[in-house]
Amino acid sequence: MSALTTNKSVLSWIDEKVELVKPDKIVWIDGSKEQIEELRATACSTGELIKLNQELLPDCYLHRTAVNDVARVEGRTFICASTKEEAGPTNNWMDPNEAYEMLYDIARDSYKGRTMYVIPYSMGPVGSPFAKVGIELTDSIYVVLNMVIMTRVGKDVLEVLGDSNDWVRGLHCRCDIDEEKRYICQFPQDNTIISVNSGYGGNVLLGKKCFALRIASYQGWKEGWQAEHMLILGIENPRGEVKYICAAFPSACGKTNLAMLIPPESYKKKGYKVWCVGDDISWIRKGPDGRLYAINPENGFFGVAPGTNEKSNPNALASTKKGTIFTNVAHNLDNNTVWWEGLDKNPPANAVEWKGNPWNGQESEEKGAHPNSRFTAPAVNCPCLSSEFENPNGVPISAIVFGGRRAKLAPLVYQSRDWNHGVFVGSIMASETTAAAAGAVGVVRRDPMAMLPFCGYNMADYWQHWIDIGADLDPEKAPKIFNVNWFRKDDEGNFMWPGFGDNLRVLEWIIDRCEGKVDAKSTEIGFIPYAEDINIEGLEGEVSLESLNSILEVEKELWQEDAKGIEEFYAKFGDKIPPVLAAELETLKKNVQ
Ligand code: OXD
Ligand code: MN
Image (tube, rainbow, N blue to C red; front, side, top):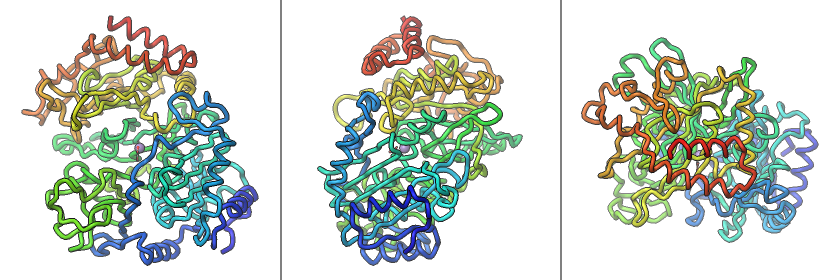
């Protein structure tokens, strides 16, 4: 097959890699329906994919990864910047020359007997001023078919690239799926990603975490924009006005659920709607009017299946009904469909579990689906997808929301005093381990801006970049920055806030604050709502004004403790901590004294 481009930088890089990995055959992915069909058929013939019930789940397939290859591997993920300091204390670092040598040794000849697929893809709508081009080489059809869902793939991407050298190189080699030789390496200074010995989504769909966060965060630093681990949603009020929010949460805090939120009944009746622009990644830059605009660089959802159901997230569930690839879920043999824990209360009795063994749905110690099993679903399937999803100029952001899982301490919501204080609030983000496991409850893991595993450079420089972005904005036009915590618990361990759709009540307060429509109480940690200003109509019996008051309280002793934790965390960065943040920490300490 002939190359789909004459771009010299592309062709010479591919020649080099062909020389290294020695494929039998090279196939350029043009994005056509025919080619996709052909690849699906090939993957089914080798068992890489299982074709599901085409009446119930048209164009849907099931894939099982190797049992030792089911999640992102943070311990084997490296930022290969020229110095360790550039990667910073929160990243694994490897010297780039050593890394290339080691990776090339692993990759050498590894495509022998296999096909090299060349995937040209765009992160962001093709040709958008926000968009960036990548080329991924892979020996996995599963990767090709996932990338076709998660990104914009095909010839038109190469047309837009022209003969530019500004594109991200990605080499993926399955090799033997050997855990001991598994490496996910980012070379931010070379626009390069190399991933070996894995076939699992987050490690091998190089457009997602590797490019759209790790490499892109570095590019954003150099070019004056931001790549963030944030969902984007639009809230439409009864007058038809839509305001957009970007929100960052660590894993397992309900990002996809918030992005596709269903308004409570009373809000629906009034005419409120919520629109999903993205559920995982935002690329943000200043627009011509001086406001910040965001796009979702992805084209699909790579969501966690377990727990997704008609109640928790009907929009996500609906998104998986066609053109979806399921990974590591249970296979219901009676009707050739899929099942996962938390889908419904009827596990299939005649099934195959995620590892490929027979499963009767009864043995409670054996799960049908892996806890990190996934669906890869096209964004267009989502019933609440925003009409602005394809807007090449993105959507204007009114508010930025940070959040984590904290049983105590963080109130339901608070607003930062200003941009720099907001950056501080993001930098001290943390989430607690849950009581599910025996032993310590509430162990705090700091996860600044939810970027701990995804920041492609020194986190202290990243914070300074946030501060610089703010300094360049007119404070009137800058998004307001908030922190939320849906996970406060009472002394008996019960959640004090219903969460899910009712989170819209908090988002409404946030938007009202952005519009200057509601007062707030100035406290030691920032602005807190007056309880009466959070609408709890329709929540009778679930949340009283009294309990609302208690989840809006600032408990100084707990904050004194937390300030010590922040100080320890900041100490890792030595004198690279931006002076603005060091000063904010001093202010917090003084305020909660
Ligand atoms: C994640 C994901 O791990 O989005 O954050 O898959
Ligand atoms: Mn994520």
